[in-house]
Structure formats: structure tokens, C-alpha cells
Image (cartoon, rainbow, N blue to C red):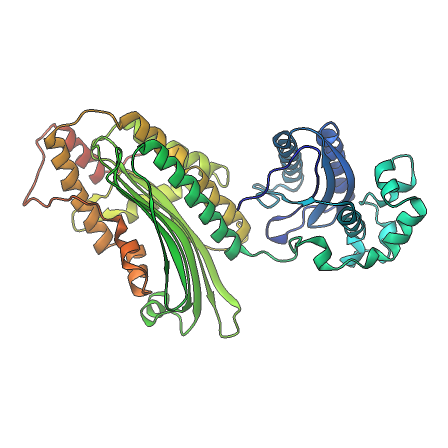
Length: 487
């Protein structure tokens, strides 16, 4: 999800909460340590006009005094330092707060006054105390001692009027706060759908830059039963012979065929995701596939009864450069290790098992990651899963584009091009015979052109084709038959 950049000399309401609304402050020491970190990291970069810390979230009103990127980094350092200490104290691992802090630019003095009152009275609003003036972890009392911020007192005329406006709450209404996000609920569906829209823009822009010739053609489509998508296809470029980077968000009654598949009755569903496949022209450049998706099911009252994340990314070379496979897998592992030490091992194995042409007895490529049915548990909240999936998505370009840049101008022969097209046939076989995503799209009346955009434009099926012993082609088949550990 795109968030506006902090700008120097502007004032912002900054706020965030614990993952899945979990508590982030358990003791007095936690609150006090967080306040010390505010002084440590922000004192030279921003002026803090107001703050309030509550059990599962915090609010800050700050004026940005240095370059916005510097202040953003300092806030990130603050959160990382607090999380590290908190995890050590409570013997836990992983992220503590939601992935990105929220911010709203404060555009005029009237809005600023209402925002400060909102922050200071937040403890009473959440029924933590009967009188917000007695809450120890807000900045309200600072305005009645030598730490008072003169600009804010002058804004209210004097301290007496400052207190009066707080006591009367200045008739603050939700609309006065220009859409501050509700910290009580977590809307994974909308947040993730916005994320994949932004990611599609990022990926297609970079791929057009690498290709240097072809541009993505965009088609917007609607699904009669509900929802639609945005398909982007690139063809006949300098680098990419064909590729698609598609997003969709579909909803409605779950079709009968999928009810049987999921072993459920009549339910409604929502599914969204980004799916991409790139078929380069040069056989020295591998094909790549990736997708990141989210699914919800609802009962007759519209209540969520099940939800999960899925996705992954995998590499399909035609001529194997070991360093390329190691690079791709290292980026996958680095993304996984930030969230759980076992994720890479588990999801690398699942990838080898899933992208496997059982009728051929060989893998589709050299693998990567594959994960599905990632649901909330004692170990991982849905926010934790969101952070993991978006981490993988954010690093896709880091995994693939250095390989493309290194191999796209290598020479090749017609025989090598023929081998590429023969191997593409195996790619087609997997997608049409085994792939669950293709099945889901067809069973839910998805857009056929978008579903089948993964198929390459030129393919060969030669009868009883086998490479020469000791050749690079034979070496590739040996690896595909016996997957190895790349990192």
C-alpha cells in the first residue's frame, strides 16, 4: 500500500498498532522505554507536539524538521530498537508492529488543534482511564510544566484555553479527523488488494525499462458474477518474447465445483492476487513465474469463516547457470529468514514437489518458493502472514532482474532456440494438466485470456526427444529429475 512521503517543515499525525491488534506495551517499563527511544531517535529530526501510548497502539503528532526520508528511517530505527528489546524481554520473535506506520498530513491550524485534542484524550476514549488528564503516558501534562511547547500553547491562546478545549473536546467528530484509520480492526482484504495494484505498477515499469522496446498492453475486465481485474501483457520485445503481469479481485457465490474442492457448502468468497509469467526471447535467460494471493470465505451473514494467503516464485531455465539458481534461491531464503528460520526449507521443498510433471518424472524448473493455506495460528497472525507474503513480493525483482541483465545479450544458436521451445512444451503441460491456479480460474469463470497468458508463443513437441549424453541439455534434465539444495 502506498503511503505519502513525509515532507520537511510539515506536520503529521503518525500512528501504528501491534500486529493483529496485539498488545505492544505490557508494563510501565515498556511505556517508559518507548518514550526514551522517541527522545533518542527523533529529538534532532522532528518536534513532537503530542503523543499517547496505549496497550496496542500509539499516536504521535510531529513536525518534520529534516528531510522526510531521514525522519522515516529514524522512526523505523525507533520501532526496530523497541521490538528487539521487547522480544528479548518476553522471549518472542518476529515483527511487533504492523509493517508500515500510518501518517496523515495536518494541513491547517484548526485541524492541528483537533488532532492534538484527539491524541491527548485517546486514553479516555478507549475507557482506559476516567480522566485523560491523569493518564501518565500522554504528553498532555507536559503542557503544564517547563516542557510546554510554546507554539502549541499560542495556538490555543493560553494554557487555560488549552485545558478548556480539551475538556470540552472541541466537538471533535470522526469527519474532523479526515479519515484517520480505525485502529480497532484489520482489513487485510483491502490492504492486500491495494498492495498488489502497487506491486504490479512497480514490476511492469522495471520490466519495460529492461526490455527497452516493448510496452505492456493493459486490459481492464469485469467478471459477471462479481469483481474483475487488470491484465498487462508484453510481447515481441527486445528481451521478453511474451509475458503477463496480472491482478484480479473476484467475489460472489463459490461455484459448485469449488465447493466440492474445498469441501464446503454454499458460501461466498473473495479472492485477489497478482500472477506473472515471463518468457524471454534468449534461451540463456530463464522463464520465471510468481504469484501472491489472498482468499476469504463467508457464511450467510457475511462473517469471515476462513481466510488464507498463498503464493511463491520459481525459476525455469533452459540452460543452467548455477550462479543464477543460487542467486534466485538466496534472495528467496533472505526474504523467508526475516520471518521464520524454517520457512525457506519448508517452502523450497513444497515448490520442488508442486512444480513437478509427474507424468514426465521431472521438475518444471529449479524451484524457489511455494506456500499455500497460510492461516492465522498461535505462531503467525494474519498480519504476520501479510508481512511475509509482501516481503517475498517486494524482493521479486531483486531475485530475477539481475539474472536477466546478465544473460539477455548472450549469443545462442538455432539448436539452442529449438531446445528452449521443446522445454516450453513441458511448461505448457504442467500448466494445463497440474496447476491449481489454472483450475481455479477456469472453474470460477475467470477471464480466459488472462488465465492462459502464461502459455509461451512458440512451442515444440518432438516425438521421443532426448538430449545427447554429457551435453548441457542433459545436465539440465539431470538436475530437474533430482532437485538439489542451491543455498
